[in-house]
Length: 255
Image (tube, rainbow, N blue to C red; front, top):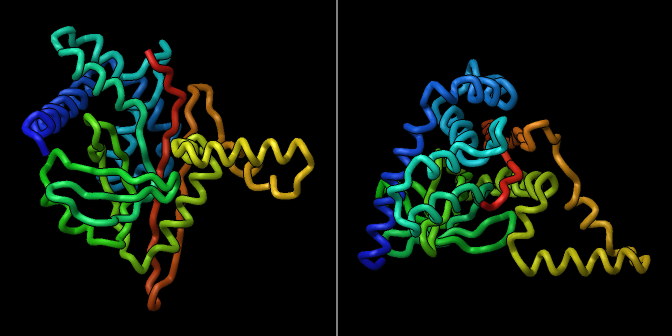
């Protein structure tokens, strides 16, 4: 990692902290309360990770009554930011999320493969590489990633699944693929395959049923967001493991 990349990662961590503080202003109290009431079913018993996940969705993806996001208003309020930092922070509206399989450690980075779009992501943490020690090869993480330069940074909490819990990870990936197909089509090859299926469908091919499922939608709310909570329950050696994945997918328009 070059000195400039390391400096950008440190700066990204600082800016994320400043963004969270900005979002806690009284001006956002009503919007945040409405968001949590709409998407935070069962928050009475929620742990800190669930709260952090919801707040990350609120800051980066949720559109307010004026049609803008908190992160957009944060950038507007910071004319001192260099252009490269403005572009980076605004890029955080486009969150990559879902289950990822850990491929390997690469220096201070973690290389993971998305189970949704099959793309590989080189991930760093603004808290340092020590956090990756609990994420061994072939384990799975349920995480949200935002771009920092040519790499990615963890955003919000991370949930770790053992390699033996791959069924849970793949079930969550399937659920996300069906409800938010745009996440699948980050991969240009999968997008091309979908177009091919649609062309075959117009010609009456029987192989066209899969894209129909991919384009199914979750519940769309007035705010333009889709929130889904998926709970997978799998038994291993007589134990029950519950894994919840909350997704807040918002229609973010580029500025």
